[in-house]
Amino acid sequence: MTLEEKKVASKTIFSGHIMTLEVADVKLPNGKMTTREIVHHAPAVAILAIDDQNKMLLMKQWRAAVDQVTLEIPAGKLDDRDDSALHAAIRELNEETRLKATHLTEASSFYTSVGFCDEFMTLYVATGLTAVVNELPQDDDENLQVIRVSLDEALAMIREQKIIDAKTIMAIYHWQTLVLSGDLNES
Image (cartoon, rainbow, N blue to C red):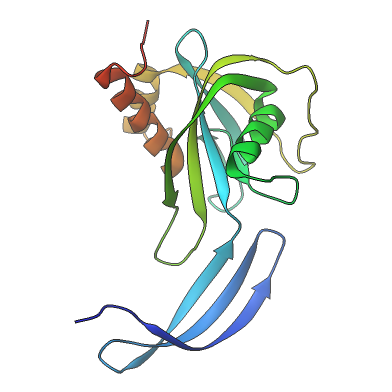
């Protein structure tokens, strides 16, 4: 039995700065009809940036959607300045942390919330961090504070629900896997 749903009709309900909302009428495999609400979002990148003291960089910022301050890895969407996800990762690392990476390696790519959104994110691991010479302008509406935490501190922050952002939690567990496998040494 197929699981594929067939889109019969769709309508854009809202088109904003970062996303578009589509309402689609779909035919289910059993022949019944239903409605799907789909958020279309530009591709995005996230960066697990680890400094020479084996501490990761977290961005402390207000998030209106959850009405609180969050701790997140540097991240952002691809836009017309970017010719690739890698370029966006380099740009976002500069904009948010004022750092560049000697080594920037793709770790994983994934959909952030497949139940309703098509945002596709690429996670990079950045090491060999140094200050940038040419700082790129930060987004006008972005207020960020950078903090640095060890792997053990980050894992504790997940347990204590101080880190509640999914991409950041995934990145921390990826970091733990790299350390445990010996692919990233921890001093």
